[in-house]
Amino acid sequence: MELTATEERFALAETFTISRGSKMQAHVVTAHLRGGGVTGRGECVPYARNGEAVPDVLAAIRALPSGLDRAALQEAMPAGAARNAVDCAMWDHAARRAGCRVWQLAGLAAPKPCVTAFTLSLASPEQMRAAAMRHAHRPLLKIKLGTEADMPRLEAVRQGAPDARIIVDANEGWSAAVYAELAPHLKRLGVALVEQPLPAGRDEALAEIERPVPVCADESCHDRASLPRLAGRYDMINVKLDKTGGLTEALALAGEAREAGFMVMVGCMVGSSLGMAPAVLAAQGAQLVDLDGPLLLAEDRPNPLRYDGGGVHPPDRALWG
Image 1 (tube, rainbow, N blue to C red):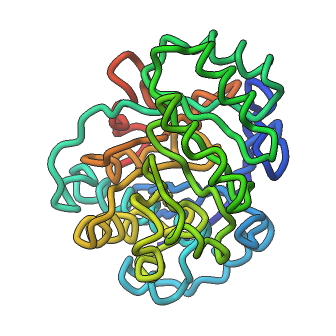
Image 2: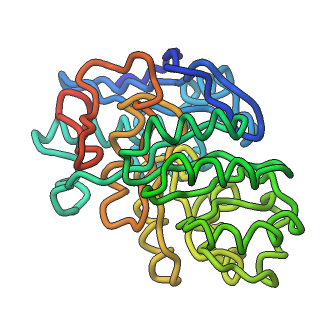
């Protein structure tokens, strides 16, 4: 078995902006696991917010000892982007050697298409209204906010897409006072969910503030170890494979979260179809899905995921799994 890792870049169709900054490309790491005449692949997106950088992720993958299986990998690497790429490559490789699909190996039901959110970048109210109008046909829009002047943006998006369900993602950008002021307006404007309104580690106020719409933990939730401190503060968790460290932990986190009474959302970083493919399996049965990364790219990988009116479809074998 040979494990290698490479970095790749995918240009975005337009600038993607959140409260922490802007980007014009998806910078990913791809793991390749070769052996037995087949190659398995997995993709991750190193995220500076989580203390990750592409060179460090490449080095961590290349430093892994040979002969690890998925169970040993969970102990050998912490949750995060590097483990995600390797874990997903292991699933892909195992399925190809066995001549079956990953969902079968995992004991899951055959996956179905999932309706996914489409993300609108943080911009001026006028620009966000125009973007909402262009995408008003989509059933679910996710809007990036996270400033002290978000009310005009929220109103503008609702004007531009009066019939769409809306998710608001503040990316830790609000204070408790700003959130408390906006909360009744979120309900008035028909917002279905607000993601991570307060900074992770400083979100204890959510246990005391009225939550008129469900609140989802994103940066505050990485893996199963995160769950105990989220009780009473959040109604939903956002499962992202780059946070959980792969499909293995993502499936376990989603299951344990449901048992603890949380609703489940499955989300993504901005990456290619290879990065989204395993997440489609994790998204089965989730209350909300946000796997629009490939829709934001100017060019995707060969054999990309299919998106249509039914949502994002499970991956073709030629792509992953």
